[in-house]
Amino acid sequence: MRTLPTASTAQVRGYALRVWEWPAKGDPERTAVLVHATGFHARTWDSVVQLLPENWRVFALDMRGHGASQSPPNRAGADWREMAADLNAWLVQRELTDVVAAGHSMGGCVCTIAAATGDPPLQGGGRRIESLALIDPVLFNPQGETPSMPPDGLSVAARKRRRIWGSPQEMSESLTGRGAFTHWPREAVESYVRYGLNPTGRLGEWELACDPEVEAWCFEHAATVNPWPEMAQASQPTLILRAGEAQGHGSPTGQGAVDIFPNAFETVIEDSDHFIPMRRPDAVAETMITVARDCSADTQD
Image 1: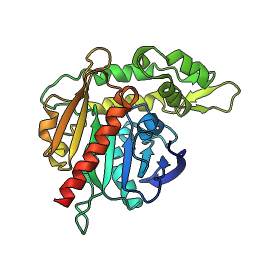
Image 2: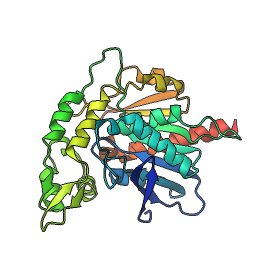
Image 3: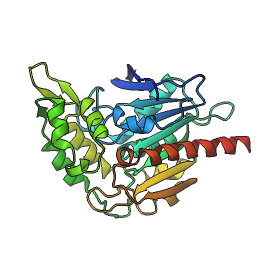
Image 4: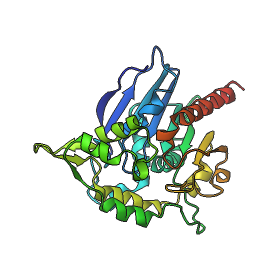
């Protein structure tokens, strides 16, 4: 069992971003950085982190407008390319190299853009992002492919989201076994709620940490970001997990996306919908370990 993570705040490109760190046991063999989905937060990775090797140092970020991080003042600030720039700037700030970057949904797109647009290879051959584990990433085909989860419908739903709750327990009980949370383990729902609500200062009143309007802006950017040029430039070893269940929340990963990357492979998780980190954290952890091992083999060769 890993030790509990520590939380800190980093000033990155004008935004205060919350960063969670799970330290390695002994000298870290690897460093992993985790980027969450739209409307989520860093602690939705908890189940995955527990399955990673104890000698890995793991970071998870609340992206701008999510969790305990500062929100953008307008729609332009919620652009996924801005978040990718935040990720690269934070990696430079922390002087991190040879990172295994894992991203879920929006986070997968953000990690891809960051990997392609970050610093060139460092002196001695290292890179900021060494490998990518993309978990059902939002990588729409710009050639007219219709996504399974239309961004316009998701943004409308986000704006209708209930903002105020009487307690975390009330929200947890309301979500468990329903809608997008139908197949989530109870502990995954409780983690989502615990770090996804903030007290308002009024007795018995809690507010969503991710403002529904900010969440809607993020969904609206999904249809316009077009990461395919960066996908073709992201030469890092890349493993993609695609959701196999089509009903409900199907995969937003474009058909043929894996073929655009110079060095990518894809696995379909047949027994999961879009929420693979919650339903199959074992598959996510295994993917991260595999892509890290493949990088080590390439280096030795």
